[in-house]
Image (cartoon, rainbow over all chains, first blue to last red; front, top):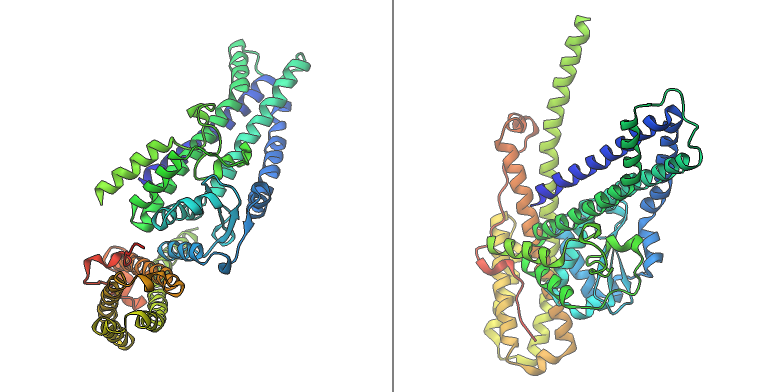
Length: 293
Length: 183
């Protein structure tokens, strides 16, 4: 279960790399070397944008979601539960934060296990029992253990670079149509192909990015069970989330992928663009693990 | 040219040996650390017991056998030192505590007392921590023992002075779960 998800992530990241390669190819065919010169700039801009949010993710997400860090004396029960999962996983105790929001949800962030932060809404702490919360915490700590902040930062950088590249290149086509280098390819088929790539690449990049996020969610569910050896707890927690119709008030798409349950309205977003696998599929996967143990 | 190749191969061999040696040492240290974690958690639980016994005594003094069983199990646990002894004593304490919490069921005043409620939460989290530290220890022992027995690491276990370690086995089959008392 964990191995398949890891393999698929690598496959998807390779797909991202291939996509970048295709865009570079399109730039070369259409504009020659002057087109290719944009590539390092696009990657640079994307890296600059994503690196900051990756490096300071624990602090940035706090302000974006309105989460407040708490101390052990504020909620000894929650700290006890997190310590349990830390012992089970061998990870360091992360920073713990609370979001005042009646909708049950939770998330994890931080560039590495030493800078990890996990946050819970007041809603999730109210509605879940010990075993369910333990499952949720194990899921969040799995994101930390699997370094999902890094994975999504890499995915976001590539998708960002592709978006910038395609944008700049298509603009160059519309506005500077005739200014093509001598070394550019004049084969009409190649030109049409490049055009198609430039138009479709950004969408493909977003699809790949979402697919990576979904795989990481499934992986975190599987890793969580390897920590607690109790698939029933996380399954019950997901059932609570599935039954609950309230969503967190803060619904920015830029942080949608970090919550345990997607805060975005499921029906309006196509399954392909979703950052999370359908919750019923996750419940089914956990039920299958229960019958194994 | 030839000497460079020979030196290169030699360097690779040395690197390989160092890597295997370090792997064994690292696994052995992980087992030590996991063992220390078990001891920390058992100590924590042991520290909770006097307080718990006193609280229960206040409401149910005549449940002497149950209370004595807990105290006796705790005393035995403090003297244990080998893995097998500690595990056996741990199992007894878990069993005795479960008995005590079951007895508490019959005393509504006790169950309602704030002191008992907070002790009970602390006990269930500690019981879980003990269980998870056992699990983590056994996982580490498993990786170490696999390395000691399999090629190529088994060739270096002698030099690294690393041998197979003992699993932490608690006899009681239910012991993975914390005493589960609903209030």
